Amino acid sequence: MASEQPLAAVTCTAPVNIAVIKYWGKRDEELVLPINSSLSVTLHQDQLKTTTTAVISKDFTEDRIWLNSREEDVGQPRLQACLREIRRLARKRRNAWDGDPLSSSLSCKVHVASVNNFPTAAGLASSAAGYACLAYTLARVYGVESDLSEVARRGSGSACRSLYGGFVEWQMGEQTDGKDSVARQVAPESHWPELRVLILVVSAEKKLTGSTVGMRASVETSPLLRFRAEAVVPARMAEMTRCIRERDFPGFAQLTMKDSNQFHATCLDTFPPISYLNAVSWRIIHLVHRFNAHHGDTKVAYTFDAGPNAVIFTLDDTVAEFVAAVRHSFPPGSNGDAFLKGLQVRPAPLSAELQAALAMEPTTPGGVKYIIATQVGPGPQILDDPSAHLLGPDGLPKPAA
Figure: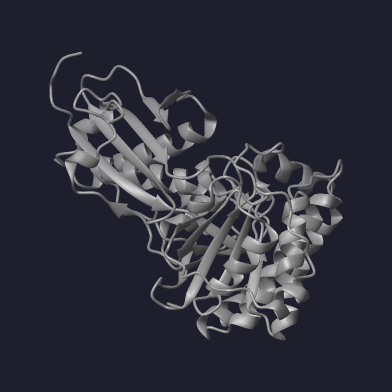
């Protein structure tokens, strides 16, 4: 390959988001339009993020993509939908601004490399962070400045929510072309500084039923899903927005748990049934309810996406005690020192009263693999340091350090 410098190289990061009012089911598969609105919390990128580099060069003969250092098929329909949409927006902009210095980039091929600093396809919203990062990075490299909800959504529905920090709603929209199915920030990341998030990683394995396949089956066979979308979610969206704006933790926590439970009920109502939770997931659910009952107050909430890993919401004054309860109920395996990752959590004793209230014999070590402690965070970021690029000047992945 010639050593001509690339026309443009951009590296960005994007966050994971966790839905507290769940999205499950599409009304339009191709445009990725949901059957209900949803609302999520953006997690901090210090703990969970996707990093993506996009490079455009006249020397490239084809579009190529690498994910976690392995080359993937660039012909994947969702990936192609994102690329097509970005190039369409770039052409539209170029026509409006003739003589745009980036105009020559439209005829060039792009190389993309992406890495996650957390398990991929294990129910930790890796596709949301991945496609948000792809849309955001491609937009920067092609000089696109419009709303990217549609681009990210075409890759993975929930990805449009990762385009913003803080608390984000994805409005389902009503138009058949999907132009009004967009993400909007409900409150910024600075809005609720005491809120903390603990991810209890139960399994980093790839899930048995992927979300796309699971959703399609639920839409086709679950009467409960239809009832949920039409009769339950609209009021829950309004109530969740209120709880967030007023920083009403007990209200936020109870609604988060109820919505998670209903989402998994629709999975069981699907035929054949889908079960994303395992025995450890259920023990975590019991642990949370017993912890709250002991305190006579809703101090902790769980939510589960399409996987067995628990996402726990609590306030900073409860984190240490809840982590102690988790350590007691799910003793660490051989990784005792590395059991807790992310934000610092000071060790706290587990009172005899709480231990008795939990009424749980400790499981075999390793039921919970590790905990990631994090908080609410910002939306996508551009990395200005050229050393952060995942691709070298030749457009190929840099060798691992």
